[in-house]
Image (cartoon, helix red, strand yellow):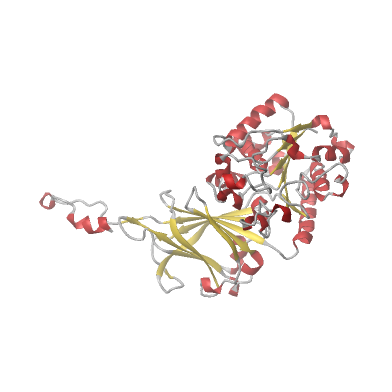
Length: 452
């Protein structure tokens, strides 16, 4: 078996893999035919500002052809390495996955839905020991990693249509949820965030996610929680991936570094006691769909023991209009209860809220799942107040009220839900008029509106 390692972001040495490659060859079943000569250590440049995630995926293809040719291989990624290989898979084989020379995709702590830390700026991020060690990261990759980026959105929507079982590809996500106190940044609470490994949230790593598109009706048809007249948002589309992705939360593992890092803490001496090592070998042993299903089920049971009752979810909400324009100025409320009121939401349900600095039409909410699912009457919804709300081109306030059975579609523990809200763009009747020659002259009647 050919095995390729792909590291994370702004790594400058293959030492980042630690002794994991040697540990795997030591404990692997002889039938895997895995030895150190079959292992290739990836190294790529990501700390240059001009380099994009797409650039790295293209460079991976060139390196693969040089070193592996047409041979099939399996890959173990860490952190940003996961999105890199997913971008490669989509670019070269997205339309014909069965042609891909990939057997196993094992992602360790992947930032598939980004990281909350990416927004704090590259100079400050470079000082975080949990992710880097004095290396200033590249800006273009940092932009991709910011919660709610366009790059994530596009790549994740492609994932929804993949049929891995037909292609003979077996994807896995293994992530930690332990915080190493020695890696705290006391000026940044994200490094000690619940439901996170200090860098990537479990919900952001998980490739089991949902996509929802809500479309606004043109007319004002309902009463909002404040008694105002609003239009409805209706559920226009709901999707989940064609195939669930095996997902496991590894106990006592944080994102990186030697003491507890999901990859770097593995040594040849302690490998037999490391859950991540036995899980990786379990992944590599999968060869048919029935084995994949069995391993996936076992991972769920192990994760439930680690998580117990602590569950967290992410909502990534993007707002556009029906002409494709980004709507960047809006207020978003979560609603609950029989009258769909934000005042009925439980205290402490909102753990974090972050607007994407590059795409201001996108906001990511990090939620305490258990508290949110306890809402009165089992009902939830959204209210969006967009701007401008007057003038020649404007928007109207809208609400979405979901039924109790739909709450579980919207909020899933340890998962992300992508929500696209599509607003109706209203064009004032006087934006374009036809007048007779007797009325020729200036646009005096529109002057007042122009000033508004």
